[in-house]
Image 1 (cartoon, one colour):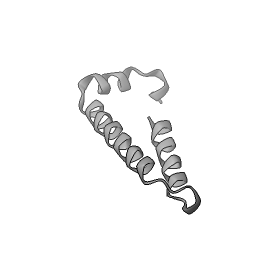
Image 2 (spheres, helix red, strand yellow):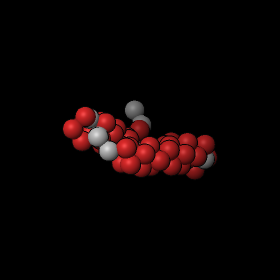
Image 3 (spheres, rainbow, N blue to C red):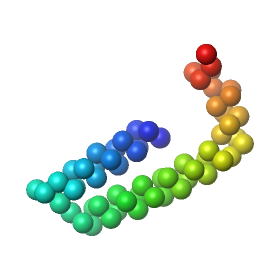
Image 4 (cartoon, rainbow, N blue to C red):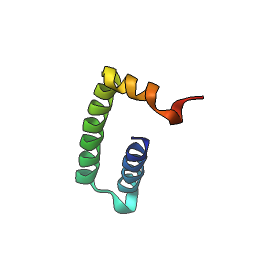
Length: 61
C-alpha cells in the first residue's frame, strides 16, 4: 500500500512542476488517491485485516 501512495506522491510532484504542469493529470491523481484512501480506511476497520496482521509471521517480534 505504501508503494502505491509513494507512487502517487511522486507523480503528483512531477505534474506540479512548472515544465510538466498538467491540471487534468493532477485531478486524476487526486481522484485515484481519494479512492485508494477510501478502501485503505475500510480495510483497517475490518476484523479480517486485524486477524491477518496477527497471523502474519513477518509482523511477529
